[in-house]
Image (cartoon, rainbow, N blue to C red; front, side, top):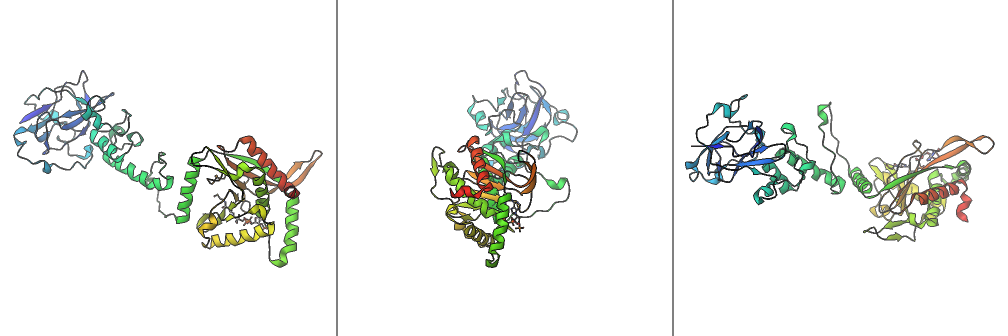
Length: 440
Ligand code: CAO
């Protein structure tokens, strides 16, 4: 029986045992790590130095050891007798492995050291100079990560960056379960994030705060989540806010509603805005464009197709109205109604949701003063409408009541400059304030 002792720690003492790499009864080779120590500066793997069977571990995780301390007993005569296949699987985290000593006492205190260990030097795991040790380094280059070699090896095999993993072990040390949980969560959130590689939001067990229940997202909501994540991660966007005085437009709308009532046509504000927006997209070609894949060319479109966000029981759908610039407000009204019905009934063909140049999202029928719609790439702009309200507006002599429509124009700042967006927005305001602008 041989007592294995801590080799020369190079002046360090009272170094913490952070991982037991083997269990009692396990066969080891001479260079196999038995435990891992961690100082403030480095993690060290302590090898067995002799082949044999570890009959007893004399330390446990959390113990402090110094040079010459006994840490295990090894039966060298059993080296050849026990086949390697009988090694216990290294599945459990180090803390959960059975401690070699009674609770509250270290094994070193209870077991006398009988045989001096062969002289050896501790292997710094994070050293790049030793290939074996370097091989044990984690996927992360961050040496401040608290993780043992087995965990680092696992992380490397799974391609997980230890620096991003929150350890659940003692003093935040990362355990195998943490790596598995991290990888699982990344795979799940990968679907939502499009595999963007952006760190995922940490998973929270909400049941610790109160009762919860889960509800699966339907396909529409999942597709929206993916699209919104892709949009937000890829597009540096800014929202320009403005207000249009639509008092006259509203009077005209009411008038036309009375006129078209017999035909069963009811105009809402949205088709008028679509018409004005289409006109502005023609006047400002960079708003009716997309960046090419490498982001070095602008693809300008000679058509004006506009997507309109429709709130449906299953979630947000965006039918695309084609050639809006060439259609009358009556045609736009009828087409929008038809497509909104199809969308709400879940019958909108995929082809009718493709090919948009720009989008419009109207929350005016619900309320609110402004919002920041998310650009729907490869489009470069989206217009948001909030609820028009009567406002006292100064006309130079007195305050007069005017119906003001809040506009929220989000745009891709890679393509559109702020000044350009402000000009676009002002032009849209002018068109909405006087629809005659769009026939000139
Ligand atoms: N200000 C004041 N009133 C407004 C308004 C505005 N900006 N926009 C609409 N209204 C009024 C309409 O005139 C209508 O009033 P009347 O019945 O008295 O004429 C009423 O509000 C109902 O409007 P609506 O929103 O139901 O219909 P719409 O034609 O204006 O809009 C559509 C159609 C499809 C855009 C809308 O139904 C819808 O689905 N909006 C939600 C879009 C959405 O979810 N956007 C968020 C996307 S990002 O999450």
